[in-house]
Amino acid sequence: MPFGLGFFAAAGAGVAGGSFDLLETQVLGTATASITFSSLSSYSTYQHLQIRFTAKSTRTGDQSDLNWYANGNTTTSHYASHLLYGNGSSVASQGLTNDISLGFISGSLPASNRANQFQAGVIDILDPFETTKNKTVRFLRGSASSWYLGAGDIGLGSGVFLSTAALSSFTIRDRIANLDVGSRFSLYGIKAA
Amino acid sequence: MPTNTYTPLANVTLGSNAATVTFSNIPSTYRDLIIVINGTVNFAGADSTLIRFNGDNASNYSNVRMVGTGSGSGTSYADTASYAYIGVPTSSDRFAIVTQVMDYSATDKHKTLLSRHGQASGWVTAHAGRWASNTAINSVTLLANASGVVFYSGTSFSLYGVIA
Image (tube, rainbow over all chains, first blue to last red; front, side):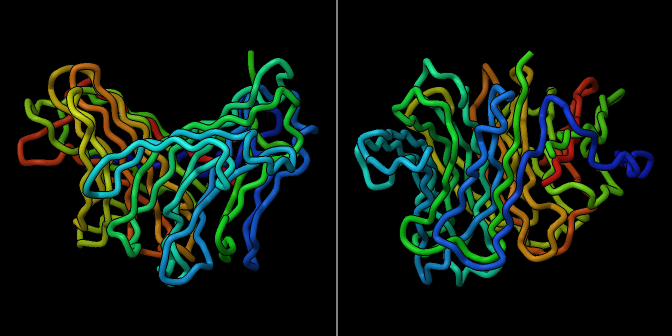
């Protein structure tokens, strides 16, 4: 049952000031260890933030780790993460506290020699500007890529930054190598009523 | 400057049973697509809801998924097929599927999708899929899968575009 969409093609990208707004996008033209959204304070009128990404690593022959940290804080004891994932053969759950992964997103970032293969993810940052709450994120990420352990993986998880300070910056890093050219990270704001 | 997005592109509610639904002529104006399906199917056993892009029915899709059936610790599968999986609904009750097609308009990378499916009396599943093509996606076909399986009348399909 086909449905053509030609009639709305002129609808365009929308207007300023909605309930789900694009705030910033970073597309890597050169490989870099991390990306940071550093102007979060200017988005404090939003209740929640979302980051949508496609990313891969410059690491060769092996997958890499994707982590996050907030407000420039890399003290490991300030982060904890839980993950549920399936790798094509089994399902497992993992918890990390006081770990060098800080806020953990993925251990399956495709290696650079997996041509054109990127991991995708959607990260929700809940109540980032509330000053009475520790900061919670949740995410869904996955890649059906040909990595060395098998078929890739699909995972969902959550993480916490043990601080009630409002978020001023959010950094995503490749823990082992660099984020490769073409990786894309877009930041969105979600309004409350 | 903040720019409003998550733009509704199309919404279809079936007036009769259908085995497939295709959204065509999708503009490249956006970066990601989000597809929301809320409906019922006629298959008593679990069967996968599928997706294809640009009418490509060759074995260009890689899949990995995890499944929780309501008992046990869950299972995970992977394969290469002529489609990607986005859910595993049964006829037990109404199901919901939300599928994210990332960088659908990009021409320098394969297309990766993330999908979650849930059903109170059925399974809960999560999927990653990769269409091994650098071509921008201009049509999406949703299939109820096996011969004779249909989306029932009343099933709704919503398509959204997200800029970046």
